[in-house]
Each structure stands twice: as structure tokens, then as C-alpha cells.
Image 1 (cartoon, rainbow, N blue to C red):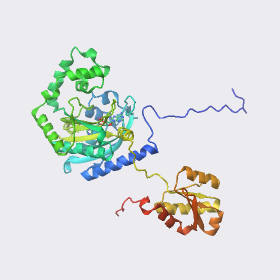
Image 2 (image 1 turned 180 degrees about the vertical axis):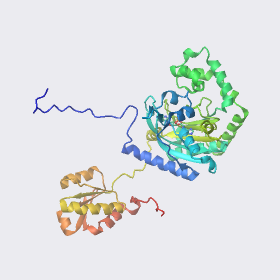
Image 3 (image 1 turned 90 degrees about the horizontal axis):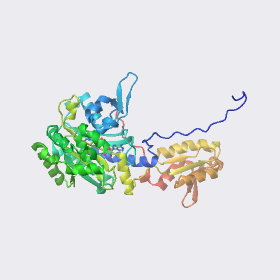
Image 4 (image 1 turned 180 degrees about the horizontal axis):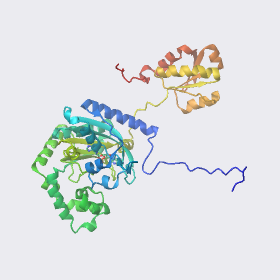
Length: 448
Ligand code: HAM
């Protein structure tokens, strides 16, 4: 026991780190996020999509029913918890189920169809973390609800393609396309596939052994080598699909050809969510590796009805931001940064500090990105800071300048400076930085 006057030894506190599988989006990556979001919003507006945000958590049943009890997401990857009243809630692992719930809940069937929605949201999956696979990640996605036509599937794919082009990664992505037909025609095939795997169970990976009863179709797109060898020998799904699904698929392909969009037909694309009907597709990064799908989607004509709404066809797509950013970085693509400062304001003395507060505000209002050193450092320390922030200009206000009503503008690159009256500082800085480089705040006019 320490004596009364003894000071207990201070233990060094172990700093917290992020939980496994999640990460901070640091300023450098936010530049990518901002750029990608701009592209998404622009392309969405052009095509008539409106933005929707559904809650971060929903009733667990929504996902279990929508995505499917037998899917990997529902059986293994959900963040499920009980609230204080014992209701089972789940952090959303994807947005389509929530969008469909919202479509029904808010009577969107009454709106002119199709209803076109887009989202940019964080998702949560208790996945095994590795490169490109996280427990919280960002998705952007598009959904078209209320109409069924292969031309709409083609449009969703074209939209995804345009975004890939805008982000400079279209060249390294391959569109993988398949049809999994209607649920009725699939039933027959599922039986055939289960029969095919009888006696071959021992060659399957642990996950596929589990999937055999619950979701045998997923055995076709397993990445494990032995499973792939068997999948190659499995009877092709196309032989069992109904005529309507096959015709639908042929039409979609003819529309993609018309739009000049290249695709690879891949009968092994099944997708990990149970709600798909007919069209399924993924964009693959050609770089070898397990996490090569940067985005995926397809048609889900039965989901609205499954969720309790009127039968409503729909099609959609979602991509993972982290994977998109990783592909962009690998291709050495950089995004324009608006974060660089124009001016550093250095001051000395209480009077100067006061004057600088309004000066900094005036400079910022004019669209000049300005940082003020309002701490207590000496002039030398402040000038070194200006150097570190890599600003092109520093405005210096010392005691003499306050007395004279002047400021000094220092060109940091050339090392030359000029003295001008404080009231001319903003105009002179605009001249030096250039009108076109100003960062003026223009959110649009409020309507009263
Ligand atoms: P998904 O294929 O499960 O589809 O996810 C879409 C994309 O989200 C993936 O291609 C990948 O880029 C990203 N993603 C998925 N899991 C992770 C993870 N653990 N870490 C990082 N990124 C990940 C869907 O979610 C469907 N809702 C797409 C859709 C919309 N279908 C119709 N409409």
C-alpha cells in the first residue's frame, strides 16, 4: 500500500488502435473519396438517379430474408446485436435490401416507374480481413426499380463502365457476365448440381462442404483450386435455363454490343447474394488475386415481392470504394487536390494577432485558402512552419506593420517580399494566386 503522501507510479497507457478489419480514412485517401463521390453524383444526376441513404442498421430479418439464410453474408458475416428491448438488429452488410424496404415502406410504387436511386454508404461485414477485404468498407451503388427490360440491365452496366472510365481504371477491368435464369428454372439445375457433387464431397474445401446443402450454386465460383477443378467438370447451367431467360440474355448482349461494351461470358459468376434472377455481372481487376471484383450486380426481380411489396422487377450494381482506390493507386492515378493552402499568416505581438483575425477571415471569404499561426511561436518558428506547409505566400504582420497599417507579403519560392497597406492585401493576393485558383464557396442560392 503506498503511503498517504506517496505519488502512485504513473503507468504508461497502451494507446488504442482500430478494431481488427477497420481503418481510418486519412486525408490523403479522402482526396480519392471526394473525387469518386463527385464522379458518382455527376453520372447519377446525368441519368436521373436520386440519392437515398438508408439506416446503418435494420432488423436482422430484412437481411436474412433478402440476401438469403444460406448466403455467406447472412450465415457468417453479419454484425448482429440485440437492442435494449431484445430486438435483433444488424449493421447493414449491403444496401439493396434496405433500398427495397424503403421503396415499399414509402409507397414508391406509386411514383412514375422506374424509380432510380443511388447511394454512397459504409457497409459492415464480419469478413476475414485481408487486402481489399475489410469489416467496414464503403460502397457506391445504383438501383433501378419498377421495370424489366434488358435495356435497363445494359444501362446499369454502361453507367458502371462510364464511372470506371472517369476514374481511369476501365482499361484494367474486365466485365464478367452471366445469366442465372429464373428461380424456377434454377431449381431444376440445383438438383442436377447436387447430384453431380454426390461422392465428391471429400475434394471440396470446408466452406463448400457447408455450402453443398445450403447454397450449392456458390460451389461454382469458389476460388479454391480443387473446387475450381470440379466446377469446370460440373454440368453447365445454361443447358437447364428457361427459354425466356436465355432470350433475355441474348438481348442484353446485343445491347452491350451496340454500346461497344466488351464483356466475357463467364458461366461461373453466381454472386454471393440469393436475390438475383437472370442477369449477373462483376467487374474484375485483371491483376491476379482473390479480391479481384471491384463491383458487381444484377437483376433481382423477386426481391420486392419477397419483402412484402407488389411484384416489382429491379436491377442494380454496387462497387467497393477501397478496391476502386487500390486499383487507381496501383495504376499511379492521382486526383486533383484542393487541400493545398495559398497563404500562411505569421504575426508577432497581441496587437498584430488581433488585426490578423479579421485579415484571415477576409482572405478566406475571398476564396484564398489561408492558415494563421495564432499560437505563441517566434517569427522564425512561424516562417519555418510556413515552409513546412509548403505555401506559396506568407503574410507577415509584426509590430512595425501594425503601427504603419501595412503587411508584408513574402513570395516563399523567390524569397522576395513587398510591403503594402493592409486594406490592399486581399486584392493583391487574388492577383498573385489568380482568380481561377480561388476556392469560393458556392452551394447555390437558398430559396425562401
Ligand atoms: P457485393 O458483390 O456483395 O454486392 O459487393 C459489391 C462490392 O463491394 C464488391 O465488388 C467489393 O468491391 C465491395 N466489397 C464487398 N465486400 C467487401 C469487403 N469485405 N471489403 C471491401 N470491399 C467489399 C452487393 O453488395 C450488392 N448489393 C450489389 C447490388 C446492388 N446488386 C444489385 N444491386
